[in-house]
Length: 137
Image (tube, rainbow, N blue to C red; front, side, top):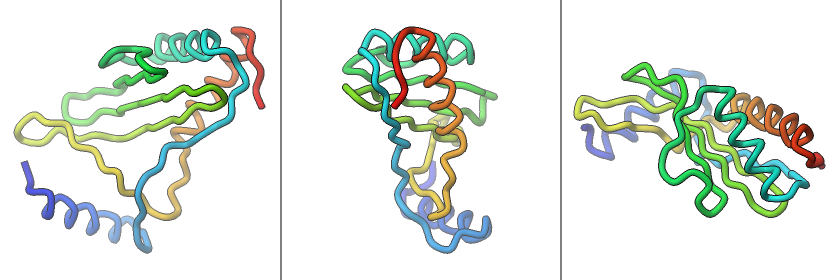
């Protein structure tokens, strides 16, 4: 496993070569949702099933669901959805397996990060919330 300083240096170089002009800390996408907790939870669970996500941790504990998708053994997508009274916070992070078998992901993104994966999850959830009886804001 790389020391933290070396990991940050490698990440910074990756961002430079990817065309980033600087970097910033990743923040989850927050979307408003006007629906009861049971509706939000049903929509999230259905999306996880439809997408073939593997739920990890304690699903639904304190309004949080964490899942893994697209696990190739060396690369995977980690998804976290935090549900509060009137919004969802959606995190999608690519993780790579290091030589020790640990999964590493970054909380650093380009300033121009587009939230495309998070937006796709949010749009699918919005449709499922409507199906389960909730409303979108």
